[in-house]
Image 1 (cartoon, rainbow, N blue to C red):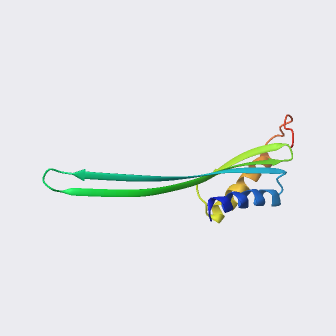
Image 2 (tube, rainbow, N blue to C red; image 1 turned 135 degrees about the vertical axis):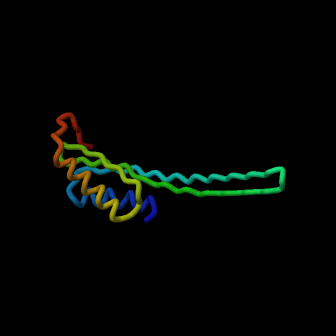
Length: 102
């Protein structure tokens, strides 16, 4: 699942499962490491490494309770689990009486 689809899926699932509000912030980092070694004796070594990391922060509002979750995978099952856990946490939280719904 790409990052845009993952973020949309998380918000949609949270709303379908009862959240009155949900927002999700996704990030994706690509790191390219290149290393070159040239020795006087003629030995040359070149290495490259590409690392991709992705994650999402989720915030849900359930009635007047807020909860946050984070996942470092774009796997559908992991996203489902973090949405479920975040909603479970919101249900267990005390109401935030200062919360104003938009």
